[in-house]
Image (cartoon, helix red, strand yellow):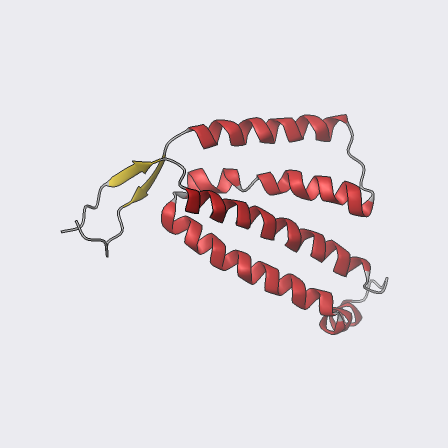
Length: 141
């Protein structure tokens, strides 16, 4: 009979890979989204914007990346509780910020720098904590 009680595990190699891939895909998706939006015509009208989006192949790439991220996220959540996994993926805030600075010449001032340090500290603290996940109901006891 399967054990329904939560089990505490360390960060496995597979989970670390899944979390890293989720961060990479989120970063890629956000950057592609910005890239695609910059190629839209500058119009305040709703329907011409929708038509431009439908004709812009970069938006298909955005959708594909976010669909891949969805499947990765589903696998991550099979192996970790949300209160552990979600804060770890906040690392994408840092990667998006850094790549936005490099690719789009976004400004990173002192307050953003402090924010980056706070996010890093939070991820470090959460990654040191234990995670819980429920036993796989299909696993042999």
